[in-house]
Image 1 (tube, rainbow, N blue to C red):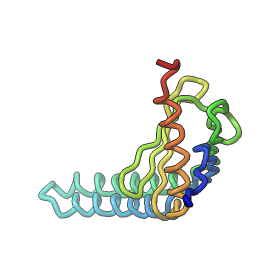
Image 2: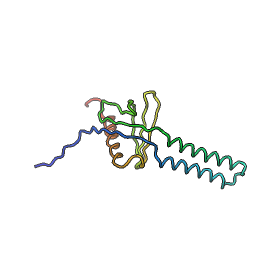
Image 3: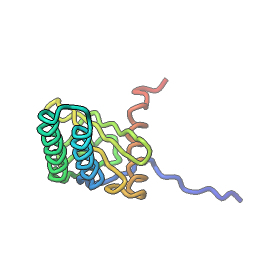
Image 4: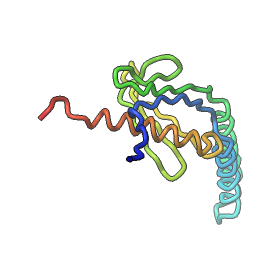
Length: 151
């Protein structure tokens, strides 16, 4: 007697919320501080070093503040080849998911033709949700690589 398991159809839907990463905002702040410090400890004349250090610090902190104020987005992979991937309820085209370890990057082209992206860091995408995204992205990739006609 065989013990075969029922395999899934491969249509995996996934709904993810994107929000700004605290890790990214912390790193941006730290880079601003380190940039300011490096200006002050260099052999640059003090008359030039202080304004550059203050501007580097201000820019780093501004980037961190701007990143932390980014709006929350909802991304939905329908798991059905006939339906488009949705971002905040609007369909998007040419969706591509890339991985760098536990970092996930989603790139797409909006209806206006602009190329955009979102990135999830480990503090915003736990392991279980990463797995869901991998499965949903895998079904997208399989649908994209499927031949249009039978041989």
